[in-house]
Image (cartoon, rainbow, N blue to C red):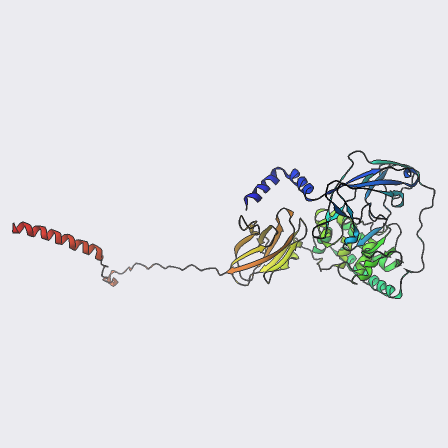
Length: 513
């Protein structure tokens, strides 16, 4: 491990909270939110929201689920009356990926104030004081042309207090509409009917799966989308799918094809206007089934209705939904996309019980190099490798992601792990002797929450069998001993010859004298 990384790890352990805070401040700009009353506040329930780019750098802010939208599409305010939470009654939307036109430019230090009529989006039906604070978030366009979360700051003082006197108007009533279609062409009706049929099938299967699973299930499909099970969470999910199936199969649903014209939006509903679904441009371009499908969209939107599931949109997309299930299962159980993805079941996940659902869903490593990626800060990828022959296998990655690799046997006992190949290479590398036809599991995660692509490589070396030396036994029968000629040391013999010659010459001289 490099000195720089080793020092960073030590500092992270000692100064964990400050390190995270500084990283966030340095990595992104931030939006400051300020709430204030205006002249019409008491009469129409409106407030002024001022957004400030607190840095000197320009940023492009995503308007979705913020006060910058012309019509609110998310519960972005905390509103209380007599310590009771005020219900959000505005629209909830399923969207695709944002495009350039969904962002608005904030110059460095720029302030922008918008007026929002809260009584149009929240059930502020009683006269009295309402405490209001902002709870939403912001995203900006990143260098990779993807939305990146911005740091949000707001007023440090108490929540804004609004004294509101609602107008004496009748509550919006749900109209009994004889037709299930409003403003729909014949082709659109046929598309909706097919999606409706598939949604019935999906929710019937999902409902049966939940009703037939064991208490506190560890099934891969459940854990992936709703996280660690508890009695209450599993009960809630079971009830949601039972109501979803009943609604799709038995209730009259009104499909509005003419009101919404937003291309990047799939559909939206008003949670207290039961069974009215407003279909938008994104719905018509989606596949009938699969991920983010037409059938799944109907399930997503129906789950929002208060009498069905009362779900909200904490996050969108499969990666974010999985992360939510892992870190916040209570929110996953209340998130519409998690219900949709559980129903679509694409890719397929089993409802069979498992103590290790992540390993059960491991990707097969059969060809190398194998390309993959880490898309979230907490993601860990699981792989299964079956050794074709016994020998020493070396596994390593290449790429810009600082990877950590571990290998387990089929009993899930950790065999070896590695962080850095060398001081100059932050990819992992390890070698281990594997047995023929045995299954092994490899996990790869990133150091310090890095994201990006990598490739997995493998090399093989046959295990060398050491030569066995068998010592000769001593012959126990003296009669069978052989007469071996001892080896001659010629150097010693030559020295002896020289000495003898010198001695001979000395003695010869004495005799002559």
